Length: 172
Image 1 (cartoon, rainbow, N blue to C red):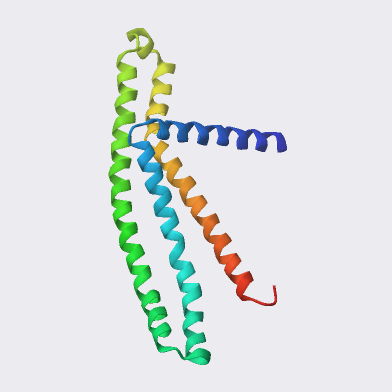
Image 2: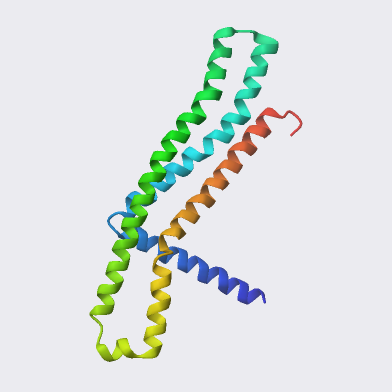
């Protein structure tokens, strides 16, 4: 059982590496990966803003009572998430267009490869099954990059929020 799980992990890692290489190898794939990572990094900041700035505002109201800082903190709490959301929306729109372009390029390459195959090979039932499976898989290749970016974003967010909690909580 453990050997099978290790084989599944190895197979999954090989598949992810291959899919990432395929995305990175295309003309629009590099920009797609970069924009996805920038969008993921931008997506990390709103939870941090919502975790830190209310505490700063409360601290200013209770202890320091510095009105300019209080206004700055309230402005940051209100404006930064909206600005980041706007930037993320533009990045998501561009990423969506690049994903469609990437899918068209990879599908075009696949069908060009199939057209160049020998007719006897194409008519083989086993090859037809492989061709159908490959065609279904090709559309999902860009999703591997998106999934990895989402996973990395979640890990970064978890680490940042954990570090903030550990710094702000004196009991840890």
